[in-house]
Length: 392
Image 1 (cartoon, rainbow, N blue to C red):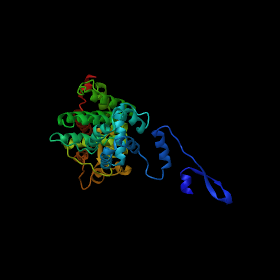
Image 2 (cartoon, rainbow, N blue to C red):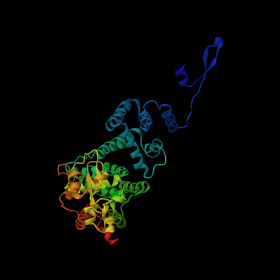
Image 3 (cartoon, rainbow, N blue to C red):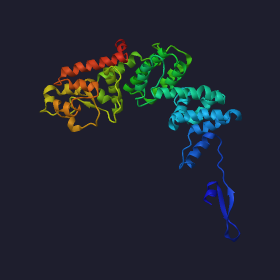
Image 4 (tube, one colour):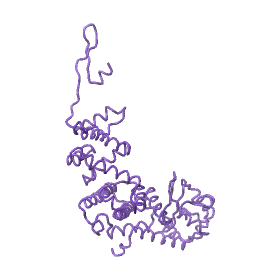
């Protein structure tokens, strides 16, 4: 009876009190998008139906019987290699590549409207879903393969993949699908894409600004425009360079959120190390050397007697270090020597170049912080090519 009820039957009492089915109810919906929403609700206790399941049924189902099994295997092999969640993300990214604007509908509806209708089913799988899927795996795993430049490209990809947003992926996919066999072009593009994406992180660009910028870039890639031109969406304007440098050279700790400032300092640490550093730690935090709240009778107050100067310096890049532990408010206020030995290092050693710099000093005077600030800002300025801001 429960099974029959689930299928939509109502009941009435028959002769002798027997319960008999009276009718069956059907929910009719005009399109697959509506059907998908209803199924997702009704199927809440089982494996959720993903947009890819509906698209697979539509796209593969439209292929002639003699080739359907082969294309089913192509689809399922890609889905299995990426994983269910990553495959769903892939379809969403393909939708974004073709839509070139902020999504306004579901992946299912917009994929059909902006992608599927432009191709025959076999062509859609062979020329769009599978090749973009293969590139997607390379980019998100930082696993670009080439006889040259692969290590450099993957270094840029590694830092792009550390970002808190992935809006950079649609133009990255659009470019790599076209130029993955041209390593020099890949190197230049991903060098500049890292620069653009980190600048947007540092300038705290909104999601709408990021989508607009990266959509413009995707259009330029598809049109074959010169991406090295100053007018390209891939390049930073003088004003954008100036705004980026202003954050880096100012009270960076106070300006950026925790995840963003960690990403920036880790990128800086890798640059200072000369490459090859691995940051596979469960916890990485950014800590002040000069404490935020130095006690009046401390050595810190003696080194920085001017309260205004302390405020100007405390959140600056030159006063920050990286730790592989959670922050300890009490330890943060320890004197410099104790802080170095018991908080900033383990057995006098730190895995971070930025923190090792601090350990090399016997005191922490304003001149030391100022010199370090200049050194670190110069490093980021050179890497992200922010020098042209001076002409803005």
